[in-house]
Image 1 (cartoon, rainbow, N blue to C red):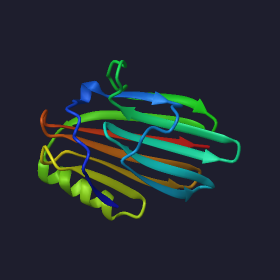
Image 2: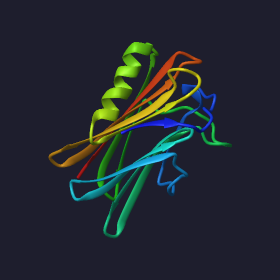
Image 3: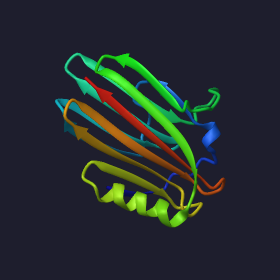
Image 4: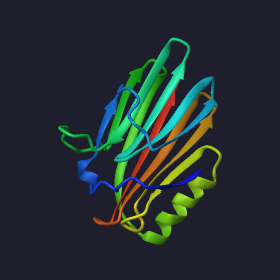
Length: 162
């Protein structure tokens, strides 16, 4: 699903982003909810990044990657921990933004029934995209956050394995 976002683009950089586990649902510009592996997974486009919410009877969990007021940035390169759904593994890295490749990523996520992409009007090339994958025994998602003003593409890979 491709969404043109009317919200103003927050002028952030990769170094402004932080990872938070267990936050309540944050205000979203667009959501995609799907049932996979016996879970309800909601991918959420935030004005400043993304959130993934997982729910099952009696359990819930969330990952939020965002620029949050009062929270210093710095995404971990890797984080592993146990949670209510099994083992969670998070990885993040920053690449140099190449506009053509980045927009191909956004289009691919938007065309996927398990994907969601939000494109901001300005600056040109600013977007957030998420793509969910289901494999035997695990749920995984990849996100891309394009910051053309700093020529950065933040890529995160997350996996929950029971």
